[in-house]
Image 1 (cartoon, one colour):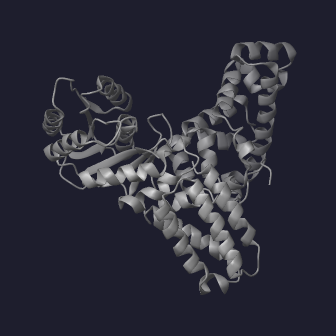
Image 2 (tube, helix red, strand yellow):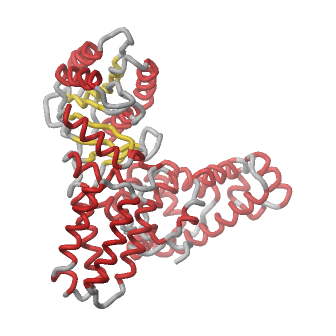
Image 3 (spheres, one colour):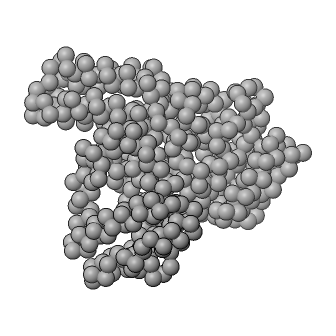
Length: 455
């Protein structure tokens, strides 16, 4: 997400960072480039105009021109204004009501409502320890009901059955009644979508809303529709008392216009972003962290949270103790690290949160592919326990057997072994100084490309 915007903004602002003095002309030139970058990212024009106006006004004041590091001061202003455009502070769900608390999901067809309902259920169950029930009021698309039932089973939520011959209002009312009987804490109501905003759709969803009186009414929208996402959200906001927005498919959105437009156009906060197809690919929306990502500063806080949620702490501690004792880093350990990286959304998701990614050329970023990680795991799985423990024994005939077993070739096996050797060296260094040394390295990387990438 934001790859194109990040590159354009960091290039524009980097020209000013090292200068000891900024003139009004250089600031105006930089703002012109920033404006073009935002428009190319499909940010809504009124949002772009307001943003540029605010930044220019502050940049031409004493705050920047009299600063000892004017370039850094300007970057700070751009960061603060980006945060302001996206809503200043992150806002989670308001669950402060007598259970069952109803959360209604609305949006156009294909925006990802049903998938988001499953993801939200998982988040509430795992992170908030809530008892969750889900129900589908989409009687026009029977597959949606079946899809939600499957998702509910996967994430451990209760499912209230519904059928195509029922009315959406009756379904929602019955689900709420059942949720009370079963002492459910949160009821997620998935509603029908249409291909466009129409009166019939709005009348129906208003009736469902009136029947269950939701605490939260969320608008689910595809981020790849750019500023259209903000315009559609505004239309829904006129028909329903929306409390927030879920931006979906952000992993496929290189522009980011929707994230920068929705708040200002609708007046409603973005509460969550969908970052992939898996049921755990939903993140709380934090404007400050997203602004840091856009400016290539990384998002170490979210990275740390991902690690805490998805990394097996016992395995991590055992590995740290093993390396500290000088026992070495085996291919078995390497596979465990690769699998845990996949659990955190893959290397693409991690790269978005690493400082300095905005400086990496797009052609190099495009080569990053999680399929490569899957291939490496397959190669290690095709080895014997002895080969994983003592990789030096892997020679010609063994390499051919491993390549055949993993569906790759000898070149891929050699490449994986080379990457493992590099990782082994790195782990040996960290073993001497512990994890503290690694965290220090990460903090030094703020604004710098990670090791191994071109500067």
